Image (cartoon, rainbow, N blue to C red):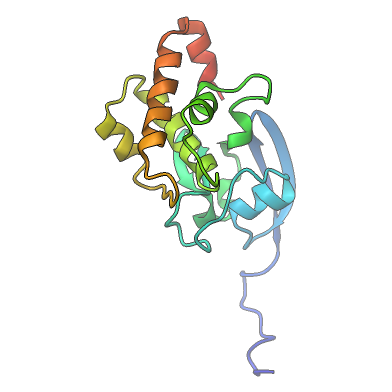
Length: 182
């Protein structure tokens, strides 16, 4: 054993109690201060829809969530940094018998193959359509720049986003507002 292996640096070990609102539900948990937010979501809350694809380097976007209204890569944040935050994950978009139009678009337009990148893609699309209900192809591509798909070639993903945008645009305003009121 290396002589420094068992030496603890002050302030880098231990736990902290955090409280977050995830998909509308409040959670209060004691977490290791070094636990990544993606691990908190997956391991502590059982929300395994948020994926890790690039060994927590922030390159692939599979772990994208919405935190306080912004897209973030949950592999790059510590859970303690999310204390007090409002979080939306892919599990919060819709229900199996009542899909969100974004989920429906990916299903209907074959916007996935292996599906590993899909949760992160959907969360990026969620924030795009929340602020821009009629995005151009260029705007869709720009919104997805932080998400990598190795299977589809992106064309079906773009079609899925356009499908979702059209479905949302056809809804009454009250319904549209509910879709984006996490």
